[in-house]
Length: 305
Image 1 (spheres, rainbow, N blue to C red):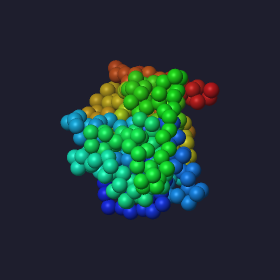
Image 2: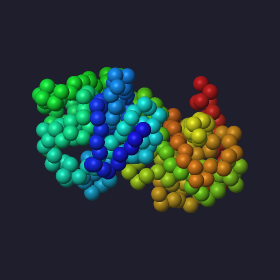
Image 3: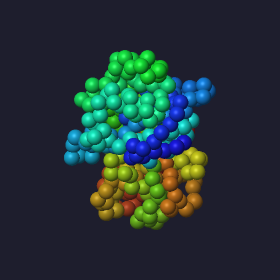
Image 4: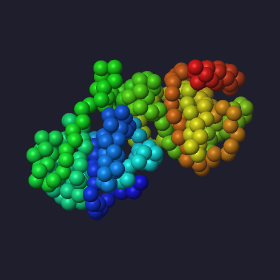
């Protein structure tokens, strides 16, 4: 997959394009992506057009928390059959593009879009004036086919990135995963920790997520860690490690069952499956060790059935 990030200078021919924020790449997003990819058999280039930073970042001093960081989004899309991912820079100039100019100059002029696939509530351009009616209006002018998809639902609820964010913030990983259509995950390079787990006979791997990564509540989760494409069951603590000297930054520490490889410096992915308990501060290391053994048994029981 070709990845274009923060660059407005690109040119493609004969493409099928889907557009959106795509935070989470949930079941609704996957419907759009699958539709675009299906046009490859007709000779079209499959393109996903998104923005490098979430539009919310432009209007607030507070960094907008993303379900998936940019690196995580790219990693997930590389597992699909997309030809090109364009992460377009979202700036004041981008925000001010007239929707008609976006269609003429970018969709048609730079991507030569023959098929455009969007959700039926898709908005774009200056003051969010562009919508599927406008795209439909120019369909014959520029010779593309517009496909507007209905929203997907789950338990009578429209699947959206905002609803998934709420589930993650609540620690409701099971429901979040069902709407995502895949396990919510945290990706990063393994860093050196304090090696406290090793002294307890349970060596762990440590990740520090990106600052704009949306994390669930501090606590212990049943997880699978993906190393070189292989999934290993384990248990993960997300939080500040209050018992062994509280960290300043929220971290992700995982004990992988029956695993003894050195992963320092390696890129791994930790998938969350089940919330087990909140993060606790214990009076002694022995109490922490006993609770960790209980956490392991609970996680193994969860994965067993």
